[in-house]
Image 1: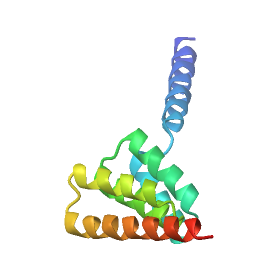
Image 2: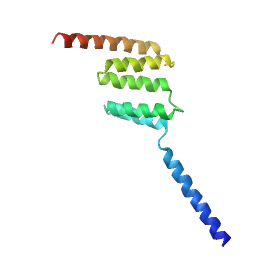
Image 3: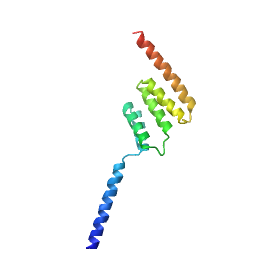
Length: 123
């Protein structure tokens, strides 16, 4: 009788542990990787959502500044220049390794935003 109760307890413990682990879901790094795939497939809004989940969950392999740069790139592709600039600036503040590249992106985005504003005001 004790043996049966013991094996039932172990089985219940294993099931509970498995359910707990599955509740954790994808890690931040997995969300970041999914975001990169979506970006490559030109699904920019979905990529941004995955990158934001990555930042919320926390990252162990990826750097937050790289993820912010990716979000900025996605906004750039969607022609949402102000949001792209904001995300690129966050990447620099957090220590993006190649800040000069980001600064060039920001300058280009500002020029695009100004050009877009000028063309819409002349219509």
